[in-house]
Length: 456
Ligand code: GDP
Ligand code: ZN
Image (cartoon, rainbow, N blue to C red; front, side):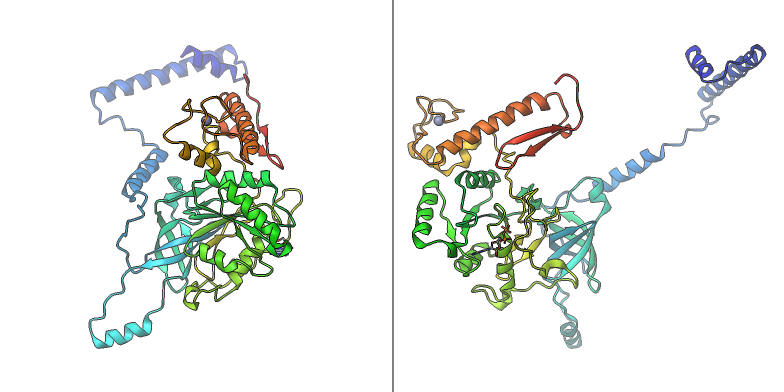
């Protein structure tokens, strides 16, 4: 009490003596009243009114109740029974607070019991599969930080089929998730380079391939602009990339060569295209989408029905590349999955062209090289002498150095080692959010700390 009295006095103008004695009398009166109330409360608990519970605590308690009533993340095999205003769909685009969902399944239509009902049902029935619905995300999902990503399979409720509005009520488990661009359930990566303008740069190509391999998602390597090189060059590249462990697909958006094979590969899958600027990613996306009948696909495949004003049928802008960021100017963080005319979806963010290799560790790097994987398998049952061998040519290592990309492997290993050591030193003493790792053009990293922390 003394301490608090002193602190109160400190914050007031120095009182005159009579005023001070009045103050002390006032404090001691307040104290004795408080003591009286406490004693009375102990003897008769009804006299003392219980303090009102904190509003925030009550709100949190309600939320917890609500959360527990929410079904957990739906498993991929789940087929929850759907009501008339519910559907299951795929998030194809995210814009501000809205998500565009393409309906994939709805509830079973009620079976008509009478002949008139049968006639009416035929008149009324509008196809719902393939319809695009503009959705908000249920506030509760946001509260419990359940993110909804483009590519997610979702349960949509409160659907107004006329206005095509609804609310995302829950999310199904993801089979995969990539961070840049943020897309869920990606089945396939298309690593696109061009044979000319620009020519493939083997180290840059290796970085892209390593980054793609690190996601664990199947990948296809394609080389565009085959129209710009002679057959000999094409064969030479094919042979070279086969030695790397890839079967490249050569194509040309210009001459349409190879587009039917590409379309066949992309069918029924969700694909993200990655590759450096200028290789023709936007041109390829446009080509695969503008061909309404598809290269060899039937008209029935093109079933998608967009909302009016949807940007989905807009074309990608070609050839506009910001020289400063190296990203396409049109590229935003808003990623959309574009329905392909031959079936399947393609992510429309072709501008992410600097592989960060953040997911690759010095131990996992070897796994990202098909050449090393092959050497390890072929030498079985003999293994490297050391379990955590980095394949640096030590005695007892089954990975030899007589392959083209060995130098790139060593270079990337060095880069990753430096990054890991830096992270160990820096992140050990800083919170992760305080450090930004900056990608430097052409590979490598720079680090920027947003605040200084003592002891680093
Ligand atoms: P992105 O940066 O990867 O999206 O590349 P763009 O699609 O913007 O294409 C860059 C340039 O390459 C544009 O001028 C295109 O017209 C051109 N281009 C794209 N595909 C081909 C092709 O197959 N052959 C030729 N000769 N030029 C192409
Ligand atoms: Zn080894």
